[in-house]
Image (cartoon, rainbow, N blue to C red):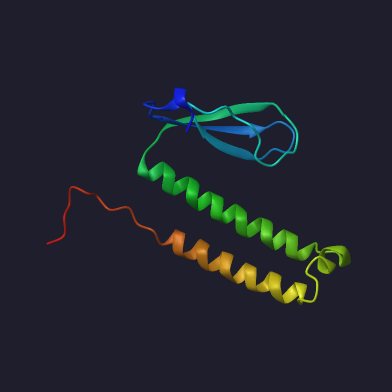
Length: 123
């Protein structure tokens, strides 16, 4: 953690969209927005500013796992022979299917997360 950031607690989640790739990224108000997907500096447009709550974090986590699964499916469907060669002696399609299964399982577990009200203690 940077020295100047100590003692600062973020209150807001800022959602930015990249003008180059069109994907969104979330940051707190204490962070400088940069595209997490492009390899070069791009313009980031603020599209949302919300108070950080457990519900917001849950929503962003679910969206992130959905995007992860979608990207893995696209990667699997568009694998080239060169991509398959990168797996060496392993069966590329089998490895990707195993990875997709694990990603789907993670997505389903996250989808089942339920927020609990800390004020309502179970007895």
